[in-house]
Each structure stands twice: as structure tokens, then as C-alpha cells.
Image (cartoon, rainbow, N blue to C red; front, top):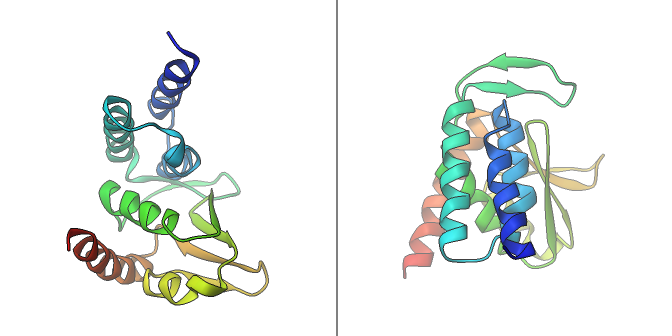
Length: 153
């Protein structure tokens, strides 16, 4: 087994060890661009979606407090948000608790980030998306529909 295959298997297996939705999202974001195409990518998405469904109502804050609640974004919608954000030049994503952060050279893509439902934090000097907030999700769903339509054209 090649080193790449072993790492991919470890990444996929890790999804089944996670116990809250934010941990699943963080693992997805951290490993999203690292998975090669083909069967490994399909297995990655399958493991992610399974873990997301299993933990969709189990949430954790940055401080480690846990609570139950419905996730306003589906696994596919969150994956599309990550993919759309990853397509932007010069930005890096990270998850912390319920927040998806975007840093880097964001000035040229700020309008696209706004359209996807991100907000700018002057204090942290980065863009953020609160993944469990229904208002954020409503804006994101509309933008993601437009993003999917643009990809299909």
C-alpha cells in the first residue's frame, strides 16, 4: 500500500471517530484539497456525509461545550460552500468551533464572500461563516444555488 493510499484511508477512517458536527466539518475543511480524484475522493465524500448525518444534531463550541440542535446546512450544502470558497484565489480556510474562517488576500474576492454569506471581522481581520446560524445558512443557500447554476453552464 502506498503512503498516499494509507494517508487517505486514515483521513477517511477519522470521520467515524468524530462525535460532533463541528469536528466533522473541521476534518472535512482540513483535508478537502488533499484527497486525489477517483474512488478515494468518492470514499472521502461518502465517509464525510455519513459522519455529518450521524452528528448533525450534536454541536460543540470552541470552549468544548456541547448542545443539541438542527444544522441549518446539509452535508452537501456545507461541502459546496467549502468548494466555492476553495475556488477563490489567495484564501485559506480553517474551522474553529462553529465558525468557518477565511483569511489571506481577500480584498479582491470580498464581494463573492459577502454573497456566499460570510461576514467580515475587523477585530480578527478575517471573514467568517457561522455554520449553525440559520440566517447565515439562508444567505449561503441562495448563493450556492447561483454557484451550482454557474458551474452547470
